[in-house]
Length: 211
Figure (cartoon, rainbow, N blue to C red):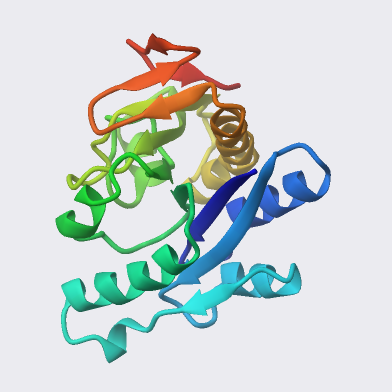
């Protein structure tokens, strides 16, 4: 049974999708802890409701970003996860903590990377006149949203889409994408490091597609 730790800052919709999939027997994994920089995050509320270890690490109690990251990952490491999933975690992790765990951290990002790393991805895609948008699950490396992309989901942008409507339409696709990647990992079909992704023992030359 794969042990997963989840880092999240917001409402925790991806976490809830993971919890539901595990409870339905559709994901062979155990969430060993949920960790957030926001005490009022929905992710922590979902974790507590499901009886999952939930930890708030307050950045205001840490004098530096490095101190926060050390405190956060001390708590994460105590749970001994096989995989760490950043699912709406809105802080940039320091290179030191990432480098020590680079083959064990993935992130779900709401764009078709390498397009639009960082924030406001939906509005940026609309403003650029893109006809297609999507989400990516990638390996976390010290550079922001720059690690190898494992898989992506694609969605056409409607003529009347706003950033809000596009985000809402993309969200269920994000959930399916993340759950599929986690299933592949739990089944032993997926492995990765800072430079390469292997799926069914073959090195990927392009992201897998989940639509």
